[in-house]
Image 1 (cartoon, rainbow, N blue to C red):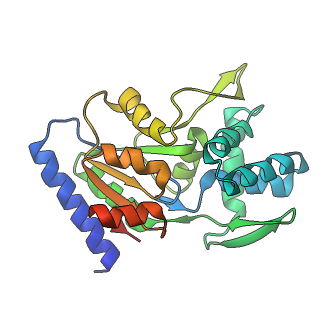
Image 2 (cartoon, one colour; image 1 turned 90 degrees about the horizontal axis):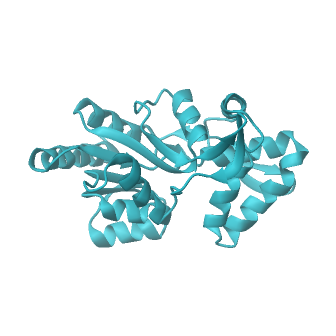
Length: 248
């Protein structure tokens, strides 16, 4: 058994023991990007549309410029706006096109002079934890900073199901088209906890929170048990200081 498998078994065991002694509903929350797969499903779509349609190149650069300057909240808000003017069916088809176009091996590519990630790979060790919890009747939710429709289609593509329990950034629809306006609360940073309180349960916290970045920290702190996917960042360092579970 690998170290990652041992870590996953320990997490599931801890959560199930906790379920025996705590009030329900019993549920766990998982981030998507960097946890269920790597690197990022919405960035895969952003890269694909920029590479295939020059109308998206300006927003492509703007998105990465925001990330590079530390304006992550603004970048997260910009991303779903790139889907505005599309129907839900068109967005789902676009996600499939992007996933079919990309490799399962992670690498890099250059688009309009900018080097960005290429590929999207499933993190089976984390998905296995999700599946084991579901088998034990722990409800699994995905809470992501990516657009909900993109996360759902990516999950479907990889055969991952949570029974519709997905919370992501939600574009407001008008006349059957997605707009750049988003429904509140936004599932980013402290908004992830707000989404849990609004859409899952107003008083009972998750048995388990799974994340990989500072965007997930508030959600993890609200959970009984914490699991961090190690990306060598500040969240992983805090996880070691706090004796949280860590998985590669």
